Length: 222
Image 1 (cartoon, helix red, strand yellow):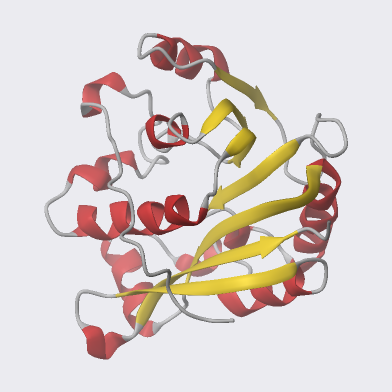
Image 2 (tube, rainbow, N blue to C red; image 1 turned 180 degrees about the vertical axis):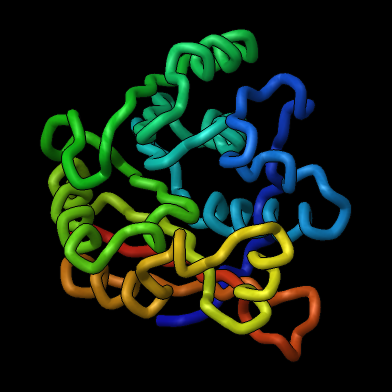
């Protein structure tokens, strides 16, 4: 099923920029505070958060600076995160100051240090496009392992269009050096292992340009 949910997406709750820990040149966090581009960055996260149904435990893969954590803390009792390079102790400390107990580690989505059937939700925002096809398959298997029966996967990936490629070049990125899978590759990989609930497109500020981003919502069989 394709379409958007009828309810209004939640507003992304951000701390003041100086309260986040981010890596210069690698973390997109500064863009969230820009006047126009920031709206697009926030919107893609808000559409992902809208699909998260809540529960005991959520795992965010590639949590970075933790921009989702304030919102996730309203829906889940435990917030877990895994990231290849984030400073786990420092990010945890900063959110502990906000009253959130976040449980973070460094690691790879294709080999995660969690027990079977542990999470209600696995969330991946702008992560899967960086994986090559063989890695996508491995990630699907590992996500299926750590999810509870009936648990959900929510992911967000950019839709590869000429405008999106141009915008990345404006920001100083050659997209081919960073993105190895398209939104179609990601959808096909997850459709083989999970039940698709819906795909939610995020349109650009200029409707004629079509969707710039796509949110996928899938379920593991009960």
